Length: 487
Image (cartoon, rainbow, N blue to C red; front, side):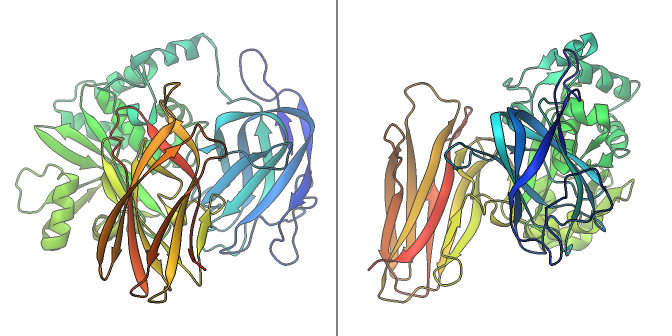
């Protein structure tokens, strides 16, 4: 395994830096991470065991910066659905989650960009989990780069010029803080040339994206997706929204979460011919009402309502087949996803989560991921996250404490922004009570919020909510939730 350092124009492979395995978890029986990072590809080694999170700590032979990771693996279909990368600090503690982007669901190579370049790294920990039913995944190679593999030549400078800035209200990608570049605008103009309606323009964009392969580009921007012709549902949706916005077609992101188990999907709504209409660029698909002679796409709310009341009226119009289509199109993804809808800091969503006093009394940051969607933060960001907690395994008459522990306050903060207000609604069989708490992040260490109650049934509900609605981001990154009996 190597780390590669940049030349002045292209942040890509120059000097190689050797890495070694410093520590690792037990892996699939008969396999270890030991010797897994050399150049002998005949040596099999496993990233994990089905249903079990595994990790490896890598030691760099010199202290340097890491900006992205490339994985090469072998499995029947899929790589790990969750990859968490963290820097090991000098005191042995772990930095926050450094991964940005979506997991890869097929192929044999992936690039994972770090949301922030990890600086002064000597030890780097990589956690793998959610192996999608594979008994194990054989890692052939892990390659770390000290930069973001990004051309900074004259052409790239033109590409970075903005048609719409990362915080422009007219930019549907402003919720991800991504610009729409002039380079993308030029591609949008080429694709839309001679189209006679906005729907035809959108379908040309969909046809174009449908030829791309599933994977992860160098970063989550539409430019990277177009350059490398690779992406997944989230980045395909962002690319469609950007291409449409370049033709002055308003758009917004729709998330369909927690379906199937520990998964989800992303699609776009575009304002076409006087109303919002849903388009799925991952499968070149839209939905129509069989009773509507116009045959134009329905909106998200119309699709969901018809699937619940008159499913026989819904027709899926698709111009391609891609693996996974059965799971991520059709009735179930619209009816069973929870939460689902338009995302952004001004669109609150409530995420269902649960703890069991006897089986799973605690969730911490090492467990956040697809299986516990919505646990990683509370507040307003690209999604506005609130939580609905089901606490089970309780003994009536016994006193319990549900503790909420944040890690830090994040978002578009001013220097004097140090507090976050959180509300809790505790629902018991005997009634409800409302509570409020102000987290003061000027105090170190930050204190958690212990919410105490006396159980009157085997279950209790606690709803956590906040009042933040954007346009700026304001959220608490969380470190732990725990329920336990009070002695």
